[in-house]
Length: 597
Image 1 (cartoon, helix red, strand yellow):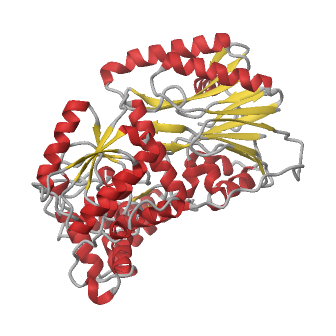
Image 2 (image 1 turned 30 degrees about the horizontal axis):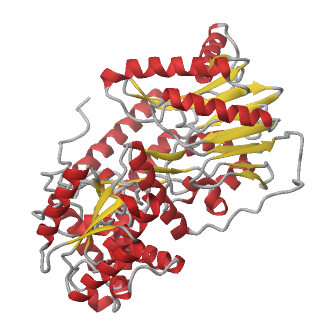
Image 3 (image 1 turned 45 degrees about the vertical axis):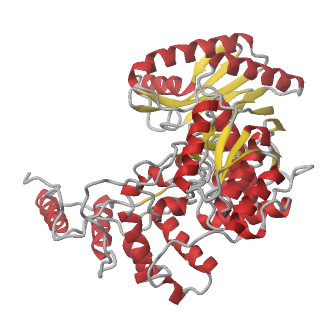
């Protein structure tokens, strides 16, 4: 079967425009000989959360748009629909076949209910909770997440093809979210080996809210060869002939690209800034150029994304005359619209000038804050125009590396600005790490372990490189919460931004290093595993005694503060990492979680 993937820029909620563009992709797919056209997960609904009062109208317009699309499409189509309805995630796949709309999950669930009602034996009627359909004798399964892929892998060779409608946004710390751009470092070669099926990955392209999606659709053959791929950060129609009877090799297999993490990250920031401004109908941005590395990098990337005519800068508030001159030179090289602040102007005075520029022009204020600064530096009380931080989800060590990479493309940032970055003040860090680069690398390593990878306090301090030094970094991260009250929105390019990390104000408890190294949790986990094992014949009295002993253990565990996970939760491919809440005092802070029953 000839299959086409329509990798198109998403415009969440723009139903009329989106349907017109989907029809145009289907016409192109038909002209290329495609039998089935597959769209990305966020192509139509966008996956954006909605207020309860808006959901009924949104769903009504969505269904009407699907019906209009079905009446005119040139090919059969698979349209994933991702969103939220009545407080629950909505993960549906709509198959448009012969101009009729089929909600596959709903139809599968109804068929399973019918078979159960008719008394079908176990095993008949397909796999529970798996969206499947057949077309021209080929059996397809649909996955929206890594967990769905894991479930399909456990079924063995049950399908001819698996459509992966990825719902994950771009994360520079997780290669699997980048699809074709980092295929050799991702989980997908292992998935095709486990399922024995063609893997058809449709990547969303564009920006939804502030999350970047990079495209990168691809098709993998069951034996692991790359049959087709789409580019990252641009639209494309990807076509491929899927033959379930073939055992390989392909006549003309593609060679996966070698991933370049920094270059892909820079492309994501440029595409994300451009997409955010376009989705909000913003043409111009306003920045402050003080000669620092961060402001120089932001100015350069903003010009790359929007063009210099749409970038307006207030130049001033530099720390020394060399940086003042460097900022002026960079503004001239970039040919952006620059306004010079009075000599000796303070940062607050320059921010007032930018605020006036934003008010008079309607430009979007771009802030040169990075993730390391958000975490550790005290911005409380500083005058700052609210706006958008394109580098706010990028650690400072990566910002330095991005500036160097951008200068290899065209050397626009001057040498004084390239050295104008600081290491957050951590007591004792100079004694252990001599160079500023190694100090910053260590700090960002500790922060990413906590935020992106969800490692526990004990793990970071004891298992990682740091000891008391890592403890000071984590303590500073905790006490800088107040400085983040007025934090702007950031462009999300990691598996977890700082704003997505739970940060409860007023919580006096904080974690500490634990001597037992998590033995209590391991013991608790062992009890749960023992309960899950099938038991031989056991008397009712024995079962009652075992349950009583287990509940007694759980009460003791809660009383000693052992209900925490020092290891965190680690996905198979590193896609989702979250720690479990713990208690470091003498008892569970909310009382026992178990009643006397």
